[in-house]
Length: 308
Length: 308
Image 1 (cartoon, each protein chain N blue to C red):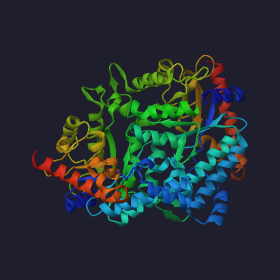
Image 2 (cartoon, helix red, strand yellow):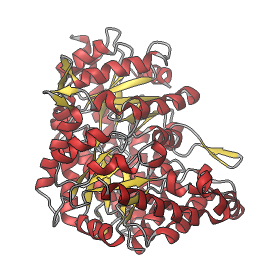
Image 3 (tube, rainbow over the protein chains, first blue to last red):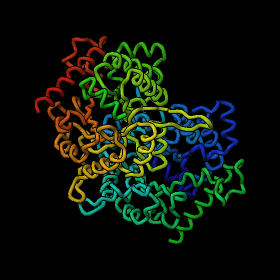
């Protein structure tokens, strides 16, 4: 799946992930209204609004982008119907040829991580039959529990040719509270990065490992260091746009071949129609605004990479 | 909710949590068979088997125990039907007067943690209506992202009188890889413990904070230290029984008042009928074996606390 991600990035020329993190407040009035007319102001209604919103954005952007990253929390908050909309979104994006990164940030002790890995990337056995319940291509994983929590994901990845992105240095303001603590002469995130490189060595695609890392766009200097610590890890970079990152902050996340990083934007793309820049497109045509935002983001990153 | 947990513990005299982590391999043949007859060998069939298994165990143990801790991964691995069985289990346990600790180990950047907090402990708004999608009483939370990832849970907890248990030192063998790293002269888990104490100070129940901690039974010496670092935090202690912890290892997790800790056992109770000790009870009466295992566990801990 890392090979497919790299191929998709080369084909589109855009190292971009669209974060499908639909808050209800991002969804235009007319979509919400129609969903509530059909299902009422219920969890099912919210889930329908989310699904219709996602579908239109995917339809208008899929040819420009290599991958999407649905954030499961935004679905899970609407309970079972919300999670059904997550699954529908995963399936639809895969049909469109997109690589789907489930932003699930799971991680637990061994037997429990094994259950998450089976449910999200692999298969479960029920009697004599097997099922692939969520079936994302990649999942994000939290490393706090150490190798025990990661290895079951690696086992499933090997079997299914799937991949993971391990949280190394997250994009949020307080990420340094624990991640930046100095230990053995270097920050904890570097130690986690070293582990990511080690976990990934045993499981390589053509040029990059199936084990990637999450490093926030908001910490470009740390990204520069981590790029060297984990030369074969693809870096998933959240925090572009709404969280403050810009194209020129991102150049050091990439290797010299222009590969090695894929940059996520969520709100900046899916709610682009709310920005002054795209307001003239109108809420009715929100997905066209998303398309314009993808084009602008791709151009921003391309320019930054060319001028580095 | 921390007050209710303490009350339930005092009433039952058993600082015990039953971990409802049903692997299909734990579920007796006759329960699986019946579920598959009704729903086929499908995800729905697996979910039905899990639900029937849980229900019988809860029916046979609820009067002896203060709380349950369903591990959501064991449900999530069976997709949407599995998660529906999780929700059914949460609701049923609450009807029986049990405190429900959702073992979800979520944690993300601020806006995303807010969505998890709303979905699991709080309410979501859909148009003019509000819903409480999963509605557990407590949730376990991963601290790797720092305060930003915790604060949205605290906000919801304050509003809903719910609580959280933050992962501090987990029970698994490799938990030391990152958690034990020395930083500023002490291990990282102590720093996390200090943060738990600080987060909890602002949100106190009668005697204990609404912010608790997870510390594995498998690390009793660390538990002793952490007990002092977080005097007002209830400690949720996994790792008893199947993972190797025993009653006498646990005494230092408790305060002198005999409170302050609640010990989880999962496999040791829900799959007790598979142990030699309870084998004569028979798979048909698996829930009676669970009851016997709860009684033995309560006696083991009581004896350890009396002889400390």
